[in-house]
Amino acid sequence: MTWQSLDIASVVSVMESGSRPKGGATVESGDIPSLGGENILRYGGVNLEEVKRVPRKFFERMTKGQLKNGDVLINKDGAQTGKVGLYKNNNDAVACINEHLFLIRGDANKIIQPYLYYSLLSPTCQNQIDAQISGSAQPGLKSDFLKGVFASIPKALQEQSKITEVLSKVDQGIDQTEALIAKQQRIKTSLMQGLLTKGIDKQGNLRTEESHEFKDSPMGMIPAEWEIKRLEEMTVKIVDGVHHTPSYVDYGMPFLVITDLTAGPGIRFDNTRFITVADHRAFRARANPIAGDVLVTKDGTLGVARIVKSEYPEFSIFVSLAMIRPRRDYCLPELIYYFFDSGEFLIQLGALSAGTGLSHIHLEHFRKFQLRCPPLEEQKIIIDIIKQQEIRLTNCHNDLNKLKRLKNALMQDLLTGMVRVTPLMENMAVSS
Image: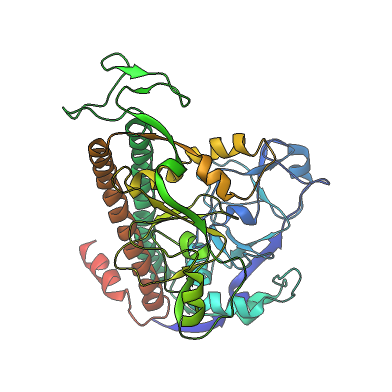
């Protein structure tokens, strides 16, 4: 079966953008869904959970941008230019796009919509799309950008269909795994809510006010054995990092900033910047993170916490990070970590900042945060239960990453013809 290397424009019959009413659109400004760049997921797909809407009369006057089932969508401007999604509409509900998206429909005699979608999503085409982006203040794609994007396309629509069938199966696995991750996260949240407020008794049962003794406290009713302590009472050190941007070097000692905590689980060192050994030694006179310390983001994305592990290399931190060293005979690092991970700190931060909309956590706020403090032995039991759930979550995330790597490998193989699906097609013909 013949394959061709073609520019995508040569197999497309419709490419158009949409519009919005004057003044824009919100989730409550009409009853017709109007998709924008925010609805296209970074790694493919369409998110329809938070969709802005336009009035029906405006939709009926639109001459371009009304969606059909199977339309390929691509973000045409802004920071996420080039994101691709496949719009699926199985209930015949009407919808449209705004001016920040292109909808693309292929020539039905040359290409099927799922193959068009996976081609544009592939790393090969994404690199070519990136090369077509122009403009510095507002980067974007011109209406003829597809003339500069080439893909390998089998002439036989049946072969295109079989390729997309294989890739769709992997996408189904990705969707199911993401749903499982969301479920496991809800379980973890529920566990933290129960265990970190009520605890667990010596028989392994979750305490309740009906069956156990509770007492009143500044944070509401707590088990009689527990205490309420300020974070400064539970720690031996609360500091932040160096207050000036250092000179970076190609090789040296790791210097952590916010993104090294927010890039994924744990602390990431793969993209860390480096400073000289001399600067590192000087900076650690202020903040010298060691295993068991808790790091927390103070600026930007607030309250992202990570526990320093013994296998991490020695490093220094910037002022945007706080370093908290717990009293290990009184408080386990995980108790502090879960205080931030549960988001409870946000309630107290709002009260401490007197509703100023603060986007910064001062060291004085850290010192004043109040935590429920169970006895040390109970802390260990609580933390062990939550960690078991975190292991399940980690396994799910590992499965998701494997599926994503498989999808990328399959796109590389199947969308270039390096691996053919013709044996599968032949088997289908024989079995039928």
